[in-house]
Image 1 (cartoon, one colour):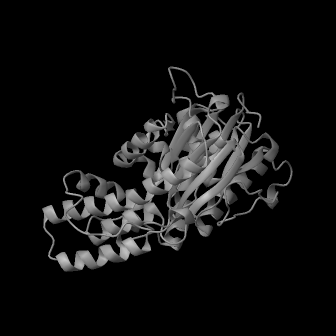
Image 2: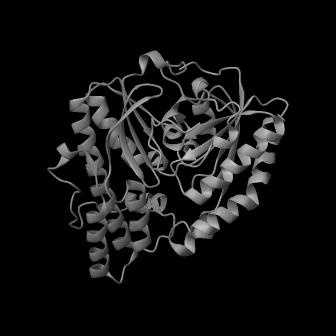
Image 3: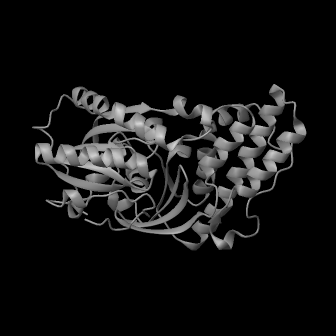
Length: 355
């Protein structure tokens, strides 16, 4: 796809519990502002839909103005508006889409509807990324294998080119990020707790307790599954209660190890089946240093480059990745069909939006 290297794009992402707006130009990030709702949802142990929608509505205008101010741009400079339409929480997606439509009509701009998963995948193209001292060269990257672990999604995706994707493995129940958050909650580490679990695991013994490796011996099915591991963890925590600090360290390390072993085994199986030049790792879990190390070890043995977002802020949900993805979407403009841009909460990467 041809890149809009000279276009200024205002991007909006309200796919779950982060209100984010960014200004981008090609793959350069001019601003990337985010309002997090995490503390508001913590008492529920997960995202509460009506609260998420209300918070997006209350903060989106402020986030837009902050993004514009930070980039030193206004709507006279902006060429296009990009917005996440799926996958995501339906009532949350609605807020960003409604605002994008409002701005497009008011300022006579075109809209590019974007897939949130593709945003995570293409976040590695942010300009600060380097390979051998230079910018990423798309001609040297593909075919690639991508692991996207974000929200309710854990997908292995074969990428033959930008815009050409084939999902070869996905979750059949709990996703990796969900599982890490739920394990953290069992241990009293709060919500979202995946990052806290990672810190606890550093001081723990991963072999202290027995937990099952998900889908062991069934890697040929190419499915991610964490419900069984989560249930086993729940029983183990109940057995070990009351918990002390060392138990929390060891339980964190044990759970994280088994969760990551599942990823490793499935990744190895996919790499044996598909010859690729690079491996892309995106989504919230891609900020996990331990999993990066494990993947890098696997890939180094096969002389495959690991690509990750250059900043942790680009790993979690954010609008900059949506703006970057939009720079490759010349053929997806809605033109005058603004009213046809609608939410698609179950959208799959590579699907065509109804515009």
